[in-house]
Structures are given as structure tokens and as C-alpha cells.
Image (tube, protein in one colour):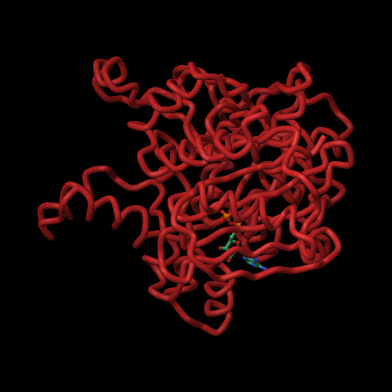
Length: 403
Ligand code: ADP
């Protein structure tokens, strides 16, 4: 089957056309600056062909129209007719408490995704725009929603409840949801394969370090805790998000600086994290380079980030009563031996020992990086959220259940 995978943001649409039989991407690309000047579409095809188009792309429908035109074009295309697209899989950020797995998008499902807008006002409206545009442009293709939150929906209540008045949970479903579920699910399954052990019998910690960062504790096949919470701000230090802070800090700063709600939101989401501490960049590569050049604030940003990861490894090991395997993934996790080493330093007492040589070799590749005598194994596993979306979409369309 040929499956189009769509990930729609406020001004961008990321896409892949995946052959789900071969499990490879025929073409992948991104439309950026939708509705702004200098909107562009960049695509790379499986054979290395590249396209970069700059033009007027006013909304998500136009963006997907352009994507389809490129996919069908003589010079850069991979299909002749849009009817060759068998189904569309959408990344949907928030499924609230309603979705524990991916689903076929029906009118009822759309209504529930719309109900979740309050929980993810920055994400779900754009996911919805993408679904509506795809339904309009590919009316015969079944559409499937794959939620970032779904994998964490089986967390026990003691892990997802905040110690706030219970009435707020009842009234506004204020609780931990967790995100990046598609990635945590994918890499934890691969980890079980690499360990040669049943998924349902392992204690796994997955560390997803991209622009957004989160960790999950996966015990006996279920996510039992995760670091992102009601929103993706909680937990680890990220490129521009603060992660855990004393919640009273924000009230204090709002008072001192007379910030509006919107400004406080921007402060936590866009001006904090690696960027906030270092004042240099949100990009981990630059932070690592500058720290290497002796920049103290870059070093501090790296120290705060990796110390936080280490604390969560300890906490999740305690939560699971032990640890069998630790997995690093996403841009930083897959590419940075420095971050992996710093996060695991001092955990030898817990039976976790990284092999420095293997750690240096593991760049964007599936590899074990722990020492022979390490009680818990440490793995690097490149994530592939688009493949999971394509697999779930195929399984739902064919009527076989996703894992
Ligand atoms: P997204 O969350 O947008 O999918 P990615 O998973 O692509 O993000 O991760 C982006 C992050 O990965 C950035 O902080 C980038 O600096 C970091 N990164 C990419 N390559 C490297 C590298 N070689 N060393 C350290 N960090 C890297």
C-alpha cells in the first residue's frame, strides 16, 4: 500500500509517501511558512532527487495540493495519479482520555479531536486543518489518526494525577497525558527485539531528545510514567522549553514583570531551556560546540539538561523496581555521545555502564553502547514516527490491529 503520512503544524506540513510493503519512503518533504511570504516546499525522493520550490502557499489545503502536484509531477514525482494513495495517516498531538490507540477518522472521531482543542490549542487545530484538507483532496482515501498521547493512556492513576484539587481533574481533565508516544512505542519495541526478549517482560526507559525532549518508563509492555505532562512543557530541559520548574516561579515572574498569560506562555515555551540558559542557541550542536570552546553558559545548559535526564533515569528505575534497558533516540539522543555519556555518568552503582568506544561509534545507527558487564543495557535506536503512522494506518485500513 502507498500511505501518505502528514504532520501538520501551524505554518508547516511535513509529509512522507511510504510504501508500507517495503516500509520505505518513496518521497519525503516539508512545506514551510504557510500563509507567509517566502513559503516553500522542499522534497527529497528515494533516489536522491531534490526539489526546492518557493511560491505562494496560503493555507493547509493549498500546501497539500502542492504536495500532491509534486508527488505526481513528471520530474520529481513518484506516482502518476493521486488515486494511487491508498490511505492517509495523520499525526494528531492530543487525543485526551478518549484514545488509547490509533483510529479510523469518522465524523464522531473528528468531533472528539475537536473537543481536545482546549487541551492542545497550539497543535490540534492545525492537525484538524490537515485532516480536513486531506479529506477534501483525497476523498476516496481512508484517513487514520495516530495520537502522541495514546501510548501513555494506560498509565496508572497515581502517575497521571497532579496533587491539585480533584475537582479540576473532573472539570477540566487536568492530568498528565504525555507526548512523543509514537516514538517511545517504536523504539521500545525495537529495544525488545534487540534484547531478544518479550516486550511484555522488560523494564525499559526511553529517552527521546529532539527539539522537544521526553522520557518514558515502560514496564511489562505499558508506559507507566512519562516526563511530559498536561502539556509538552513539563519534564526534561528542551531546546526552548523549561521542563520542570517550581510552578510558583511563574506566578512570581508574572507579578514582577507584569507579564500577560500569553507572554508567560512564550517565556516557558520559547525563551527557556537550552536557549534560555545559554543565551546562544536552542540547537544542541551549537551548545555542545560552544561548551567545548569553554563557554560557561553553554556548559551550564548542558549540565542542567543532562543532570535532569539522570534524575529521571533514577526515578523511573525506582518506579519500575529495576531497569533492563535504557534507550536514547531522536536528534540529540541518536547523535550526541557527549549528552549520553553525561546523562549516564555516575549511574554505574545502578549497574549501568556505558562503553566509551561504542558510545562514540553510535551515530544515527541502531547499536548497543553498554559494556559487556553492564546489568542494564544501553541502546541507541533511531526513531521513525512516520513509519509507525504508516503501519498503524495500513493495519487499520486492512482491519488488522496495530500493536
Ligand atoms: P524534532 O523534535 O524537531 O523532530 P530532532 O529529533 O530532529 O527534532 O532533533 C533536533 C535536535 O537534535 C536539535 O537540538 C539538534 O541540535 C540535535 N542534533 C542533531 N544532530 C546533532 C548532533 N550531531 N549532535 C548533537 N545534537 C544534534
